[in-house]
Amino acid sequence: MQKTFILGPNSTEPAHTNTGTLDTDVRGAQVYSTPAREYFGAGLQLINADGSTDMAIDASIGGTPDSAYIDSTTANWTQAAISGTWDFASTTVFQGGTESIDATGTVDGNEMQLERTSSISMSGYSAISGYIYITSFNITKHAISMELRLAGVAQGVSVDITDFVDTGTLNAWHHFVIPKEILDLSSEDIDQIAFTTHSTTGSPPDYYLDTINIEETGGVLYSFAPPPGLVFELYSVDFVLRNNVSTIDPELFMGLAALTNGVRVRTQVDGATRFSGGVKVLADWLDGGSNVKSVIQGTSNAAIQIQGLAPGTTIRVDGNKGDNYNLSISDDLSSLTSFKTIIRGGILR
Image 1 (cartoon, helix red, strand yellow):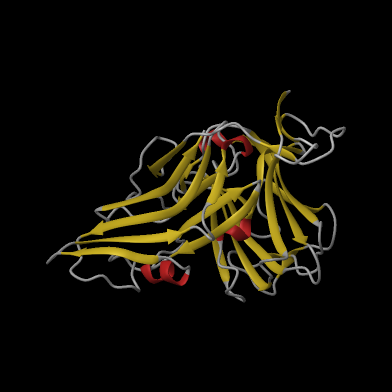
Image 2 (tube, rainbow, N blue to C red):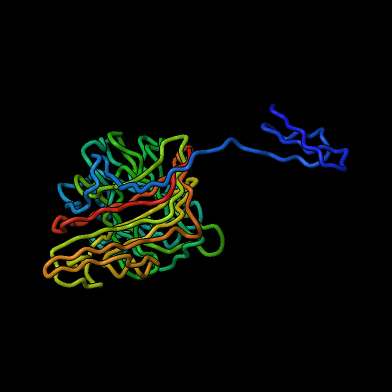
């Protein structure tokens, strides 16, 4: 332990500056210091698994999915209530087929599972999708988690599917598309999909699930995660879009019709979602607290920069904790001239 004694002019009790653990046998003031860290201002573009920053792509769902649930008689898959009351043949509301999974009788910790007759490799698939119909939800108290498994053993990580839908709009079907990278999956074998109801206090959420698929193509993730040993203090996020439009309509997505699934953004800190939201038209960014930073308008083309500021001063994204900022796309944005996302802040090391 390094120790420095500091004496005042009229004091017989020294202050101790320690680099190490608390010195419990010393009286007087103890002052602690930590090693100096370097700080670098940075602006970084989000990239996908291929290292590309280009978000003007076709990320819409395609190919042939493996359907885990259409109704209670879905081929190759069975349903089971691990705990709680689940109705796998509800006709109250349904999105595809003639039935849905009714979770309105579940409470905190209740879990159900969809199980395939044989395992499949995620190497041939890109995302998990489904529909959720919410009749009651509190964003500060409720969550609905999804986890993929192989013979009861978790593969990857669980996610809260409500991070990928608009929970503020009740009594409507919402489509969620979760790229497999968010689940920390690449080529693992899986044969089960589990859903769990979470409620910290009060009444639990009420919801239905339907049309749950393992998608062959579509759903692309762009992210930034500092490596271990680095901390990124995120200050702002800039979304820069360009397209061949003569006017910028706030009720369109830079000239495109309102997106079906939307651009979904999420900040993960300390294993929890610090922020999540979605954008289907340009005005949705403003509803979420972002601002139009700049606009360049030509006769037949335009560019817009929309900036979102971190709540408070900054958000600390810590590489040692696996923190990350990510954006997912599951619509066709290929007709845009350009779409990129830049995060700004500082790197501590």
